[in-house]
Image (cartoon, rainbow, N blue to C red; front, side):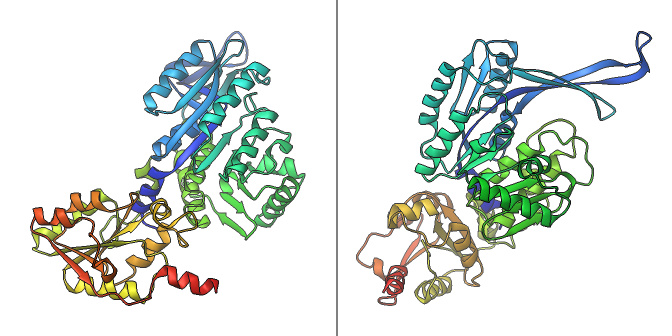
Length: 477
């Protein structure tokens, strides 16, 4: 899968995140001597920084990945809570809510760092369950946030926000709405996570839950399957530190070894994995999503302090040439500039191409005969549903794009979300638009625009009775 395709996918992913938010404070300094008062090191402070921690770090990662994330959490009426609110404003997310519990202390974790090593961590927090009234307010907010999402994420640091009632309510609601629910679990009472789609315990947590020791991939698989069976959980992702990640599903198991060359700080790596897995869940092949999550974790543990993964880091070793054919609009326009400087004729066609058949191939091949470079605009999954109904497409957009890009007649593929590719046509201004013969008595999208810049619209003969719909009907028979 190409980087541009995955980035486009991430930008369309709608996530609802809920969990324990905290402030991560880092104090940097030096230890050069032992105190004369007691046999302890003397820490001389040089600088400090404060960033979002806990579910706030998951949020930072999701925002950095470009997803459309809604967020819900609870803070106290204190200075730490105010700092968290200010940090959230800097993230520039539109849809979030922080419920204030006046009796609660907002969690802050202060880490003292010397020579890239953590000397001590000092925690200030309340870990008791939230009050009933606050819990009721939280559930009301959940009802507003949960609708029309691609995935729901619970980041449970066991600080009292994700109570048994709250957790079970979200899982039940998600299952009714048929939305995947992914949980990073810290509560020892694993019953509260029953019926979820995916849980992401670390190796120690998974071992304690299953009461099994984990020393190998096989051990991890046994552990994961035990958790799946006992708690009716569909998938288990175990984060295993320097051994990488292990994903156990009903269909099989996948293991991705660690990628990091050097480990400076593992804090927050699980949050990064959670964010990448959530934003690509059911969108990418499982092994690809796992590899991306592992790569992201490898990047963040190679630096000091929790910090979100950046898209450019995630794809910096991807091939950055134009040899691949799947583009976003920005890169496509740049490539077309180069083509036009060479005097090449730009052709354009579009469609769902859900089940690619000979009729499609014939039209694409003949389209290419009339131009030097052929762009195929592909309806995204959401676009296909708008046109053909909730049971389509059969093949997801990334698979369809990859199949089209393998055709020698195709030069560029671009995915669009609207019902029609009109906005793309306006931006790229092709010299030619082609459509199959079933459009002979219909208005072709972009036809009027083409007249403005002297473009051509060509209707191609279509092979009768050959369509994806007819093929599906034959299969049903």
